[in-house]
Image 1 (cartoon, rainbow, N blue to C red):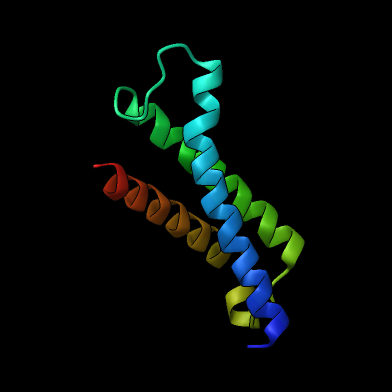
Image 2 (spheres, helix red, strand yellow):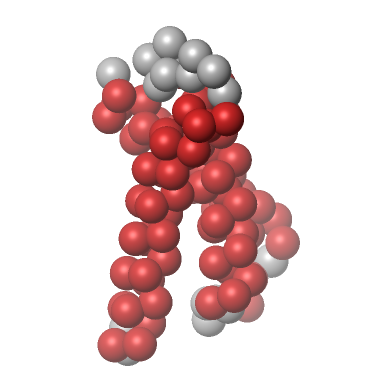
Length: 96
């Protein structure tokens, strides 16, 4: 990997971590009685939407170089779905 690609990957991962942190802080300012533990299902939905939206935006902005086999639409959708599932799983492990 080139150094520029490693830096872009690091920035993308830091943005994902930042979006998870914001998904825990921002809803509390708009939603009375919002706590991660009290409304954890709603928080998991908010967190997965934030992370998946950020992943899609980063994918469109950074435009990673993929091989032709991996650039199909079905592969992209499957990869984004798996990333969202991993984010929900990691968030659940972290808060439980």
